[in-house]
Length: 280
Figure 1 (cartoon, rainbow, N blue to C red):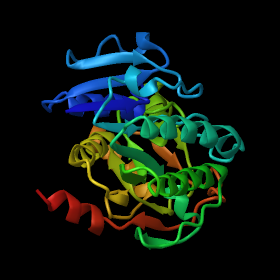
Figure 2 (cartoon, helix red, strand yellow):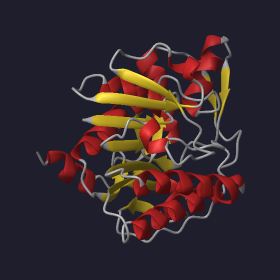
Figure 3 (cartoon, rainbow, N blue to C red):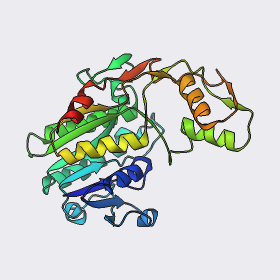
Figure 4 (cartoon, rainbow, N blue to C red):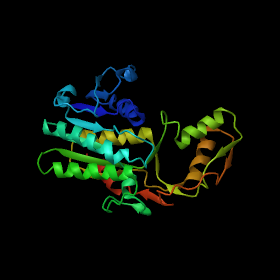
């Protein structure tokens, strides 16, 4: 089996490549700069590809994979940029449409919990998507376009709605990266929000394992949450990281306001994901 990965040099992409190296598959890692992937495993073939400028032979350039794990997306983590639906979404669709039209049989795309918008509580896949950010709107629109495309081309689509992720290689603007840097610089105080908002977090290594498992199935799974299914307050999450690593720093709660594009409490339902993963 051949599996291609776009966004392979990114935060999640690196961990997906590591997980794929544990499976007997041929891996094609697509990136705009091959120099970023000089240290990948021997079973990974690196291909330089710019999805913002799709070509008619992109499927051939990717060695005609059996499945594509599509992680690439620009403009993050600025969720409010109009770039997401004005620029990013149209070129993403053109790229994926070209692959499907020339033979790609199975596709896994990473969506986002932001597709649910301001809906609170436990979020299940059958809830209507009501995105309230340009990023969430762009992702949800891309999903709908791909579903329409299935009416013309026979390909399997898995749309994974990712909730919050943490781990090695994350951007410097992420919560864990900022906390790690504050501790490393010997700061006595860490500024954060009030910390009472409930979120759904998974380590990136577990996310990568789930994405690869779903991709290897090559099935038309549709929308599925990739989440823990367990709400946790941001304060408890940070305090857990401090305890786990033996770090000492005071939390300056309430320094930052709560984001106005997220409800105070939401998490994903894991029921559908667990049902799929339990199937052989």
